[in-house]
Each structure stands twice: as structure tokens, then as C-alpha cells.
Image (cartoon, rainbow, N blue to C red; front, side, top):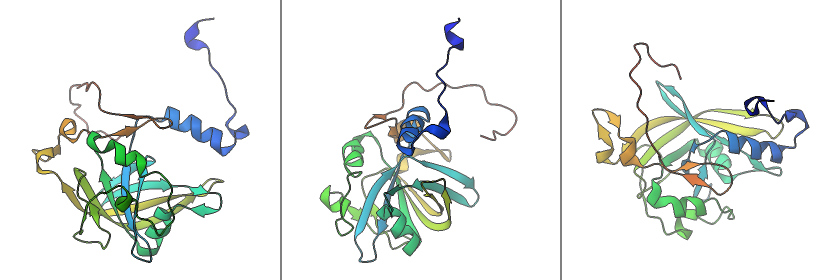
Length: 210
């Protein structure tokens, strides 16, 4: 049999959530990472990375992150966003890979990951949640939708971007220079990636819908 036609078929319905997660995070790659700051009800700044992240609308600009549960408890990020309806999404460059990865470590709600990692913060313009100073991009967001999905009841949190804060050298003719941004992407496990070869195709006449 031709090797190209050989497959390993896995019945999705038979998989426990953890095994399905391992497959999906190895197949849906590379994924952009939302580095999210939120405030607890006691004013503690929470920081966590999420690679289940995309944008869902350009007008108004809407970003979506999916936040799961550990057992019966949602992560602090979801709890804080649903309470305050505010958060800030950062895009980290490769120089911030270390603290980006370390910020995924679980801490009690009264512990600020930003303080533990020695990351400086600054006030935001339109939300009470502070932003990180170091990342080249920070997007202040206000919650617009929360939808629960699946047996694990992961929460898809959709926020409207109120302001884009970008390092000035990233913009050229209104577009982001992705090479200068040098974003970090996530693949399976504790593995990350940077931009590799960029392949440019001729522009299409019609507007892209993807």
C-alpha cells in the first residue's frame, strides 16, 4: 500500500479529555499566545498565557481566548474577567520566552505572577487592569461574550479591543512588520517556536475570507 494513503484512525468519542487535548495541541500548530493580565477582587494582578487564542471580528475588533478548568475550578483568568469584564492581552517576543513560560505555573489567587517574575507594569488607558511594560504589543479589552463548550465546559471569552498599544517600529504603512514583532508561538507540550521562513505569494484579486 502507498505510504501516503496509510493512516492511523482514532475514534474521537473514545478518547478521554486529556488524550484529546494532547492530540489537538500537537495538530493545531503553531498557535499564537495571548499573555493576559487580569485583576482579582482583591486587586492582585494575575498573569497567564493562553494559546487557545484568535481574533473573531475586525469591526469592532474582538479577540477570543479559551480558558479551561482544573477539576471543577476555572482558572483565575476566567474568574477575574467574568467579575471585572476587563483584561489586557499582550503579544510576547522571543526575548520574553522565559517569563512567558514561567507565568503558566499555578499560584494561589493572592500571588501575582508578574511580581514573582519581576515584570514591570504600567497603567492602562481604558481599563483598570495594568499592562506589562516589556511586551511589544498590549491590547486593552472589555468582555463582550462568554460561551461554554463541551463536556469540560471550557469558557470562550470574547473581548472587544479598546486600544492597540504597539512598539512604534512595528508599524509600516499601517501594517505590522511581523519579523520585527518576532512573536512566540506554541506547539505541543513545553515547546515553542519562532518565525521560520516566510513565503510570500502573489496577492489575490478577491478579499481573503480566512
